[in-house]
Length: 227
Length: 199
Image (cartoon, rainbow over all chains, first blue to last red):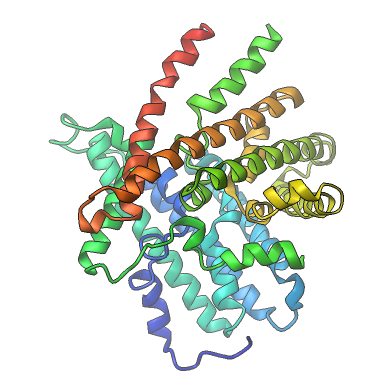
């Protein structure tokens, strides 16, 4: 349980989250915020960076506390740590980015239940040192931000004919509004996952979806027994 | 008039602002547990139950404890802990007193703690400034909307599992694309509910 993974170099850990184990497109985690906040580029980037900050801070603190937290009550402890950082980020966004705060709405407090964050705390930060956990959090967070930005770009350019609020010449006349509404979220997400499957020649398997693919599904189950 | 308002809130939560298909809350169980009809129904009933219970507890906490003491910023921490503790408590009580219900719903309860639909409904009730009755009706409607989406989608999934989709679309992508079509169908309800209540 407490074995350190010293074989991996820092750069590997950082890049793994961005490409090879991209949390949204490969691990299929955090689907709710990625579909809900990718209606425009600016909200997508804002959501991604807010989640990255929570992920980075919670990974570091949980890694520091990993020898102090008793194994049986670890999940409630992680949730408290994550909720604390979410509150900090929520207050910062409310103070300095009021527009973003209004457009993210309920999804800002819901970073608490984003399974990427609890998943990384359980899978990585509770077993590794502070430096590696920070890199892992940063990598996973940037992977999440990157995917959200790609989805946001597709949905905003094709759906509203603009990019980050600026109208584009051709697209603003011939846009497909449904792509920036809720059906577009499911559709663009499905197409991106199909694209990943095509590019990796089916090496990435999505046999189990949602909860089934979630790396901390055992955690959910254990929460009932232990806490 | 008052009851009409409550009915409007409930029906909007079921059809117009459907939690899964319009608000994107609770996508994980929607994709994960919708393979079989009985599992989908069991999970949804557990969600309705916990949504009502969580609202009944968190709304008074926010209104009578956090707001008067200017502690509104603790909302996120308090709500997630209260919901987690509540789900544990319900599980223990069900196991002890109603074992039959525990056998059918018990396996879904732990999954619900970290379900964003539950935290979402409690936070949204506060953000929309609903009173207690409105909050309860909104929660019930949201749970009912979740039930409807899950049951409808489990029927669709039986078909998509066996359809001849392009190779790279097999599995999750085709599921998401069919969810997109279902979401588009639900958008049609927007006008129906609004004109029904003359808004």
